[in-house]
Structures are given as structure tokens and as C-alpha cells.
Image (cartoon, rainbow, N blue to C red):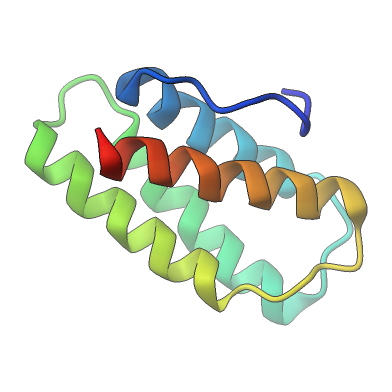
Length: 97
């Protein structure tokens, strides 16, 4: 996934994009303190993107991801920071949907 992609308008597609953006950050050189927040956010986002999750639980998981991302500081890696910004935008699409 390219870090500069716009978030999908559809909440289900945004959930998948959210997980993909956070998975992509795992491949980047990120400071350990920030990586801890992102790793947890990635795990919760992958759960939120699963097909067998009900909408209320998905929303709750995405709220958790948004809270975790709020704790993540700048990574010092432009690509990772773009993925994080896009992940935050995906959270907004889902929570506004």
C-alpha cells in the first residue's frame, strides 16, 4: 500500500486500508517507544478488519486504534509518518460512517 493513498469512503474498505497502513509501518525503521504503540494498533486494526466482526465491535476496535495512534509520536521516517496519517484518516472515515 502506498502511503499517499486517500482513505476509502466506504467504512469497510477503510477498515481494510487501516490495517494495511499499520502493517506497512512494521516494515519501517521506527523508534522502539513509538513502535510499541503502532504494533498494538496494528493488531487491533487487523481484528477490526476481519469479516466476521459486527459493526459495533468494529467501531469499538477502531476507537481503540485511534487512541493508540494518538499516543504515537513522530517516527522520524517520512514514509511511516504518512502511513500513520493515512491510518488516522481511515479511523475518521470509519467513526464518521
